[in-house]
Amino acid sequence: MNKNTEDKIRAATAGKGEIMIVETDVSGAEVAAFRVPASAEWTRYRIGSKGTPEQVATAAKPLVFSCCVYPEPAVFEAAVDAHPGLVETYIGELLEHAGANRAKKVHKL
Image 1 (tube, helix red, strand yellow):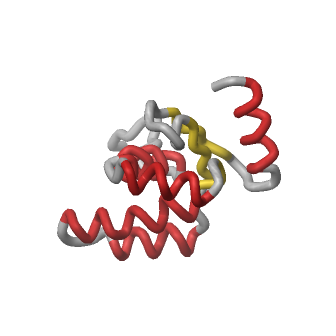
Image 2 (cartoon, one colour):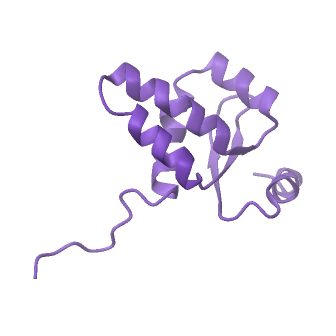
């Protein structure tokens, strides 16, 4: 990521809390930045993602799009339309960013 892109992301994400950056080799989505989902967004995703793989995929896209703060929505949408598998890449990273699977140590007492 170059300095110009980093500056654009900082400007676009000011005041949006903890930001995660995902870099890919897809034109238009070389760098995407995501905020942590709000509790209501997370709940909608979790409710919608129960069931078939199709239901999980359908629930993932709105969460990914709502949390993306860079690039601009039209650019991001065009990149995802051209490469729909990006949603799977982003949702995995976004779930971890939201706190899923972040346990440092789990043990029985």
